[in-house]
Image 1 (cartoon, rainbow, N blue to C red):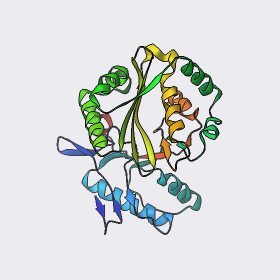
Image 2 (cartoon, one colour; image 1 turned 180 degrees about the vertical axis):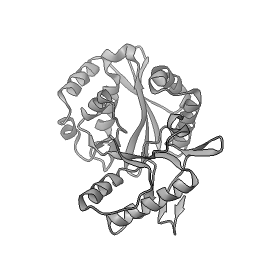
Image 3 (tube, rainbow, N blue to C red; image 1 turned 90 degrees about the horizontal axis):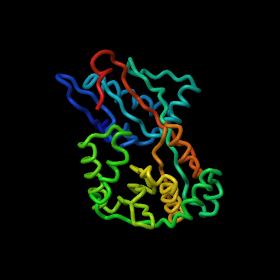
Image 4 (cartoon, helix red, strand yellow; image 1 turned 45 degrees about the vertical axis):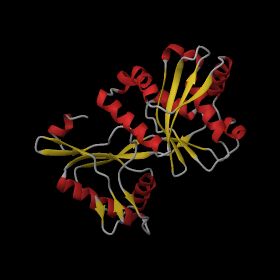
Length: 277
């Protein structure tokens, strides 16, 4: 959806259910929502969003998407200033999703100085395990590893892994994708991460570790390696979450700070309430 003379662009991902359409957040895409030219004030931005949501109400009715993190501050200012904005109803805009980011502009020693006690302890254990890093150029070399270690936990289907494979292929062809693996002394892959770099932001799209080797702390080793090799750059490492306490604690242990975003959705009763993708 394009608003005005490209004042805003709103990517709409939807699926047909009978005669109806439902807009939903696609896998492997944390924030989508509205991309817009900066307005002079927050009220102008919110009016722009309201117009887009009203249009969605007319054309799709049932929608759910995660707005970009910039809207967190906008909504906070609207509430504090008591500004009146006509949003479509019924609508839920107060569902906060947690995201963690790490500024890589500092020296490695300064970043590592913010590691939690638990992260430091696990990193020492990883360093004693004689682990080493391997870069992968072929997504097929790691897809089975991803599927074996995350499929049931993340409730992903075969078609979702095909989508992930396409995303890996496309991003690596464009030179913005990177697959990093951690191997043990027996050359067994024990942890792996897929990262996309764009606009000075390194986004941890997907990562997992083999629980059989959890005492090696392969993922801690991998993330520390990435931080060490990208410190003193004008980049940000985006961990992409999470609301799950254990995952949040793990990422936060590297000194990452919150850069949250909003889940915005309509609250239409009936059919769509019980529909998932």
